[in-house]
Amino acid sequence: MIDRAREILAAGGLVAFPTETVYGLGADACNPHAVARVFAAKDRPRFNPLISHLATAEAALALARPSALAERLAKRFWPGPLTLVLPRAEDCPVDPLATAGLDTLALRVPAHPLAHALLAAFGGPVVAPSANRSGGLSPTRAEHVTTGLGDAVDLILDGGPCALGVESTVLAILEDEATLLRPGALALEAIEADVEGRVARPSSDPDRPISPGQLASHYAPRLPLRLEAIGVHADEALLAFGRDEPAGALTTRNLSPTGDLVEAAANLFHMLHELDASGARAIAAMPVPEHGLGLAINDRLRRAAAPR
Ligand code: TXA
Ligand code: MG
Image (cartoon, rainbow, N blue to C red; front, side):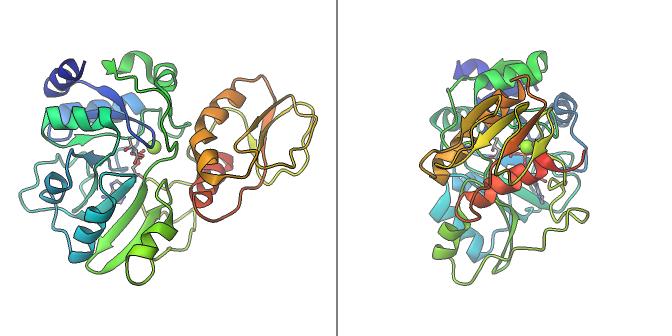
């Protein structure tokens, strides 16, 4: 299967593959036609750059001009759910379409064994946005990819449900300064415990996104989403969290009855997919605490609820 996937990538095709965060839609990062197919399959705006994935930290850092801080973070957290945005190396072969013409490059070394096997077999950088239509719910199971993208993908590697369930944390590193571009599956607390000083959190003005991908409306189910729900209406589907789940919803899924944010992140997109197909008029989401993986969960829920 990996051999077939490698051949498809080498021929400019699209391979969806599991990572520990979400499923990615992979293509050869150095082939402009393959990269263009990724944007077309997702209906993704061309100004939103893609992450290049590599098998090892060494191979990833060779494409950029990493500062000492970048090297330290790479050593500490790769392979894993962290993406680093770094200045491109002069001779970086990643196609400019993949980086939306920017002089920076987003890099990630995933920890999932299937992703690692594919990247090691292919050898070069593989762009992989989440394998969903642009703006929609992210895929955390192979069947989400099939439903969302269908024939646009040449091969789907099925690795079962993704363990973490929300996208990687994206940090921009300029010299000795780290800025959070997207909260994600690696908790900020874990990063800040490791680097001296804090990670800058730019003000979250939805009309002035600091990363091209941080559009106000994103990760959206088809149904309208209501935030901070305490009670629920009979025609609503409930995305609950914790013990105090109100009764009376048409359908209910609980992200974590015990209030565990890691479990909640792993369940988030699958439960949203399920509630979206439940026949309800809307989805009501209960409040989730704003620490640990709660930052990433609330970021996704806010964007899912934003005016479209
Ligand atoms: O967990 C993940 O990161 C998954 C898996 C498949 O690796 N991938 C993923 O890709 O979430 P995508 O394309 O859905 O999100 C990439 C994010 C976008 O918000 C994009 O704007 C940002 O990374 N990004 C990519 N290159 C950038 C750059 N040069 N500067 C700033 N932001 C960048
Ligand atoms: Mg995405």
